[in-house]
Image 1 (cartoon, one colour):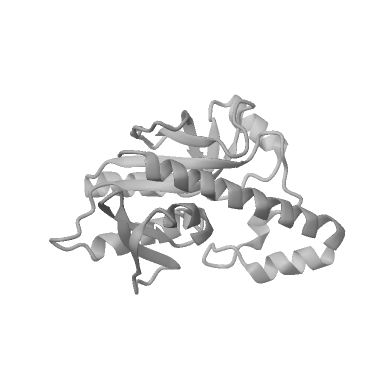
Image 2: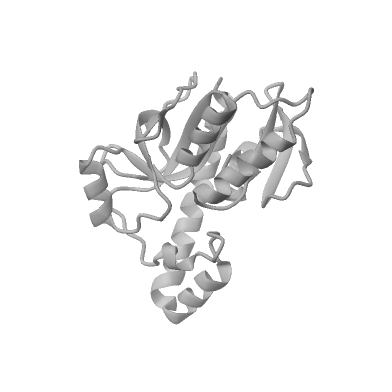
Length: 227
């Protein structure tokens, strides 16, 4: 369960017999990962879209395809200096929401408390403050997925990859780039970049390269892990 398709691209290359699902979601695929049937979905950022995605999967459950676990995955921001770009972060808990299980993996990962809020934390100043308050990483969907896992009585995992570190800020306020339903608007992002091309385009290129590498690292980890 991710927010954006690009967060799942690194995993998709490890999935055999991948098949597109005609579900009312931004992205939905089914296939075999290490011989186990998995469903990969993405439906946009934030808790409302995440809940809708989980419910869409649950509604399409049948006797052959049962929901046996929920994994909230994708990108996250680091809130501690020990987390570097490209590090895989596995939550031990979603702060003030629920504990999370740890997968078994031969690949290295870091663990800690994951803060899940419905906005992008854009500045290094706020990241430092949230880290000092006790959280280790931050993202936008895991709390909603954790609560749905409790409702449907299935195990919950939160496996993320760090894209931005505690001392990095975004030049672009991505919270202003969301549409009415909560999704990021490419039109708004492009318009903002055009207004400040000397600053914005280099930053967007930098983050695009970093998220591509992060997605690959995340996919490799998920393919190796056992849940």
